[in-house]
Image 1 (cartoon, rainbow, N blue to C red):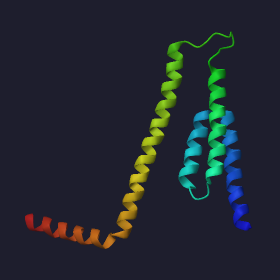
Image 2 (image 1 turned 90 degrees about the vertical axis):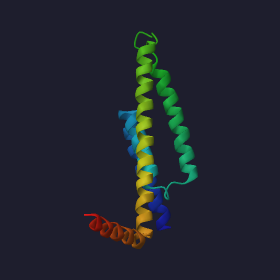
Image 3 (image 1 turned 120 degrees about the horizontal axis):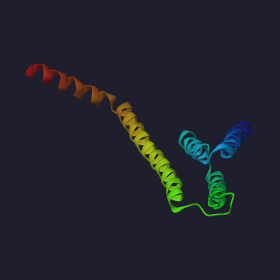
Image 4 (image 1 turned 180 degrees about the vertical axis):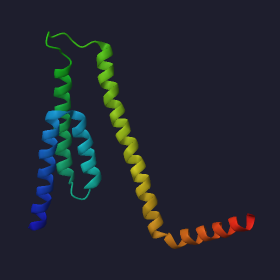
Length: 134
């Protein structure tokens, strides 16, 4: 029972923080949401992820629809829409590259941990080989 309550508490904290970040800026929300998925993968169930992603999609659609018009009800120019879109895509690309690099580093560290003796052996051989050539 306590484990369930602890899991619910983590999700509630994440939801409250995400809501406060949504009010400020969408990019901060996305960064926090992806960080939450990365840090707590075991605590996030598929149902919570589905509800979160549906809510995120609805929020993004509504915010994109509302940002297409200025106060004078004129659509934004193509150049400013391209700027908004390219900035969002570049942020998502940076996040994607960050998670790929962190995943590769995590795999490398786990490989080193599991085969540390073999790695140490090859490093010692390499060091003695370098001493012979000097």
